[in-house]
Image (cartoon, rainbow, N blue to C red; front, side):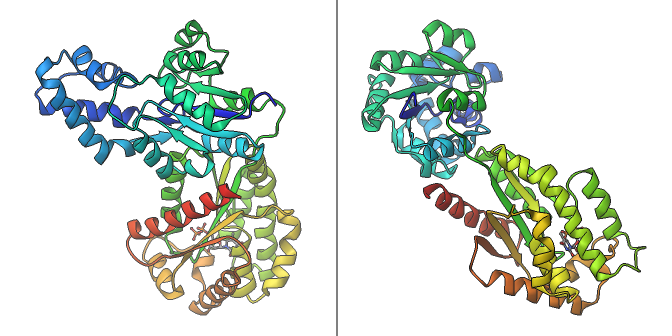
Length: 427
Ligand code: TYD
């Protein structure tokens, strides 16, 4: 193994922080009647000290700078730090480091308290062995001091990863290797000129440079379950947005369905004209669609390190065909063994809503498909089967009370998912 620890710069390396920084700079300037700046000009605020940027970029008068810095900090502390997202692929890289026994630390020129808040909010904290940044207002401390401290904390052979020449210079001063990344706010020329030992154009390239022959982490498979009308589709959108902001590369799929073949099977299953379909036929069709979805979509994505969100999976068959149709949970489980081929969700999100309420909601919108034309007793049996399934406690389930506003349900769901993800990162 080439390195035993990786020191990451934060802005432009782990997180795309442009929005929070540029909006805070613009807002501070506008309060003091400086207006008319382009996004390109505002981008110059990422990196250098604010005391330099306000006069240099905005031609601000000396006497206004203190107040501008105060206003900037006020807005940044309130909302700016949240106007941020993790670059796609970072959680997987951090998981890969951890699984292979490499340490990961942040060495940043951003105040340490913000770096800590950001790392925690965006789910990076459980993967990190330390965060080092300025803890005082003193501007005289150089980036090399933070890099040196982080390298000492890490022990062993460390490499510095950053998007600007300052990161490469700091690594040189400390005497460690550096990798420049071009997806942040510096240019390839800048990184070459400062003498980076290697350059990566994206997170996957960075991962290859650091890991070499070591195996990267596999991805994560999350399924979503609940009665028709429980709000699953709306909540899926919120879930995916949240996971993407945390840097997960997300693949979405649904059942019945997935690829072209599975979507054709879906049409047969849900077609209201197919009133003659036997329950057993239906059970096999769902399983057939699943066999296709697992092999065409889910398994390849997980093996590629992506996070898969699947709207319904085998639990739906156990609840609807096993419970609702009365074919029996065990038989449906057996029937699906070959379909899943052992590819089962790492986590299931269950949106729990009373059958009557869910159906009432569902029937109030749109034309019902074949499955939605069932009697209420069908849904009650389905709901009971779900309850049995998720009360066993033998697997990872985020059980969400699906009653309430969209935002309330989202909040409950996302905090459960965050908790599970950070638990999974610790293991
Ligand atoms: P869909 O329109 O996708 O419903 P929803 O948005 O509520 O998921 O239709 C899927 C229907 O198929 C839904 O009524 C549940 C049912 N179903 C089963 O009966 N068994 C299964 O294995 C699956 C995956 C779905």
